[in-house]
Length: 99
Image (cartoon, rainbow, N blue to C red):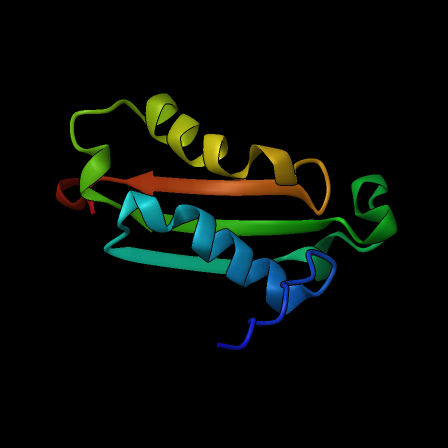
């Protein structure tokens, strides 16, 4: 058995994989992650390589929850990645019925 290579939180492609893996327990029916870091070049939060992401996640686990509770479920899974390597997260968390 070979060990899979470790993901590098500084590598933009690895960051996307880390986010996907962290959100997988929410069993997303749809998960779109867009790296918008290029739109924030020069922004103080982008110094040192911190990234800006826009995330759309649709999950049955959000049914019956208010938007703040949905966001908490997502942020709980990513909190140790903020403020670095993730500086900002624009989040759209939806239940399937609201999509």
